[in-house]
Length: 133
Image (tube, rainbow, N blue to C red; front, side, top):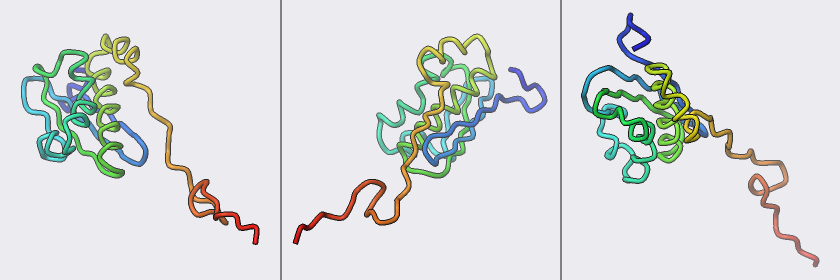
């Protein structure tokens, strides 16, 4: 554990407009997202698996206790933010995991955002229907 003063490793993850603040504590314990079970928070098994992928990939899920606070965006964006934050916190906890997480693409921030609406258009790119007469 790198941060002996506080007793946890910290990582911030972002995806679209969602921001996840992740704390990883040494020792076995539950994984909690917004004070709830991850499956209950995300509502779908595939989103829960996406969010907790860094733990399963590195094989430390049975040795750590995870606490996550996530807000903003929708559930898919939040799952991506949790995954990103977990990967970053795991690197702070144990720098030897960096190569494994980087190879899986979990340390890269996904830059894709919703495109803004432009004036004269209905949405970001959808134009009003053209009428000849």
